[in-house]
Length: 514
Image 1: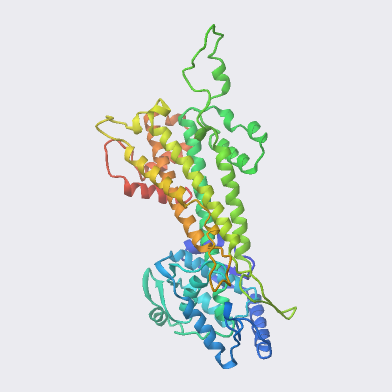
Image 2: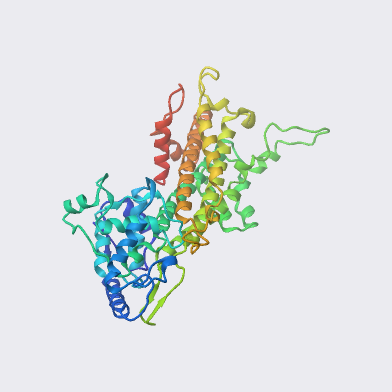
């Protein structure tokens, strides 16, 4: 077993994704964090008897002016969960749910939410057993947090609803009974609100997307390097001198990566080799080769650079949110105050994933254009039509695959509009400006899936082009490794065949960060 210790302030995207991808990982809680949780719970119990405190002895949202009697406070928390566990549509991925549960546990551990140690330990038990509640896709608007989605997690915590366990959808009660876990949990004052009032679902999803985005960028840079070799590009386009003169961090980083990948290539050309072929002429001389590559080849650092910076910025935003307190009211025990505010509002995550989404649509477009370059003989003026290695006209090569790249890119372009701008007032106009954060994250996930498909088709095209040139012995080691790895799951296309399962295998390969 590998243990991840949580204390409320130390959760990283890497830790979260390691837990999701490794069944032998477990969550342990720092004893000091449990002590903080316990002291805050004692503080709440002392204060609740003599004060009106939102969410403990009042109604919620526009009904906050309704004061609840002491003997109804437990009913209030249970009613909150049941009334908000009303999501509709298909379930979101179990990995997203598990990520949300870890994020929620971590924020509660800071001791500003007023929950009991017993609730903390129950949530930890669900996580370590990988009991993931069913969360339907459609629900919260991302302002009082992910109310509807988190309510489905809370519903399972109290022993109701359905969960995924052992890859099967089952009633929560049956799973708890099989694992000898107490079948029910009675929420204490503030606990229902603390479970559902926050940005944990959108943040958990965003954390998984950050890793996918990094792998996607790595694959795109690798494809870019491979492409430059196949067209015998001039090396000044990635030179350090050039990019130091426009010193954007992302542009310089992508150019450096390309130089590293191509350091041992024997196919790139020096600009001086062009000059040696030209002599003074009395008339206009048309050169047999292009002196500059098309933009999708020449401008890789300038296009992928902003994307690299967007990914870095998104990671920073998400890691702050992973360790933030995002419910309401927030309890400051040292000051003896209940702080009423809007830390549950999801615009930081919604804005971040929308920017990430737009950046990855541009990455997809870049990849699709290079697919077209290598498949279109009228553009590349060298390779056979659709990289057909047998009999063009009789066999079709990668012609059908280009349709997939084109249509998938077009769908992502339609999804590119920033979803957090789709604010619609709700909750009796109490929530009058909303973030739509979880939906924004789910749409970004769709764009990422699309991007992997297009980048996979590009990688297939590059390998096919390499088979045509028969210059593998001159390729850089990086491109040769990419070629060989792809060929383990996608053989060269000589005779026509159905490609769908093989494209999926290439996507899986790229998602591993290979």
